Image 1 (cartoon, rainbow, N blue to C red):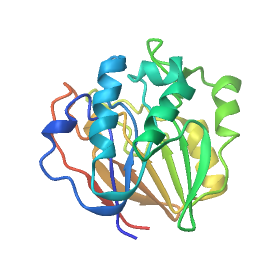
Image 2: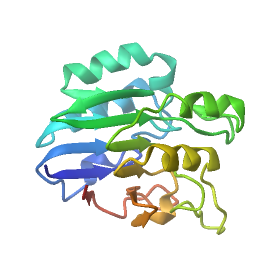
Image 3: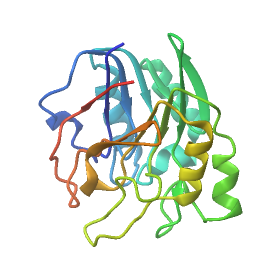
Image 4: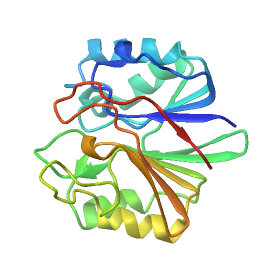
Amino acid sequence: MKIFALSDTHNNHYDIQEMPECDLLIHAGDVSTRGSPEELLSFLDWFGKQKAKYKVMIPGNHDWGFERDSELWKRKAMDRGISLLIDELIEVEGLKIYGSPITPYFCNWAFNRWPGAEIQAHWDKIQPCDILITHGPPYQILDENRLMQNCGCNQLLSKILEIKPKVHIFGHIHENYAQKEFMDVKFYNVALCSDRNKLLEKPMEILL
């Protein structure tokens, strides 16, 4: 199966020059800047038209509308052939894919949860899977911002090392577009924009 992933497009989706034709296309959140209905509809219309047999996505911390009325937006996504995952598992041609938009609390953005019991309640829902998609990174894995601070979640890392997915896909930290392998898990930060939300990278191929 040919798989590509991208994240943190922040309303720049129509400017992406090299959108691949593939079997599975994954977006790991932050499709917008403020999550307005107009922004979200623009993205869903574009994403639904991409040349992929399956299209899977999660929201990010900028995508407020998805948190305010998740069931409405799941239906709108489904109408366009998109699976919008919010703390849930799907199966695609035998591949188990789990998606969660949750990130550690930062300035009260969408899908923010406090470290400790509040965020752990979401990580406890993660089921064994082949592909794990979260908006944010695990601690010390492709998670450094421009100030060289580690912004990832250590509780998420613990869960990943417990269930050992083949692949973990995320974005959120724009400065770390790259791939890394650690403890037999392939980690992909697929954020396309710079720290100023300017389009910088292209969708990344995911190898299982």
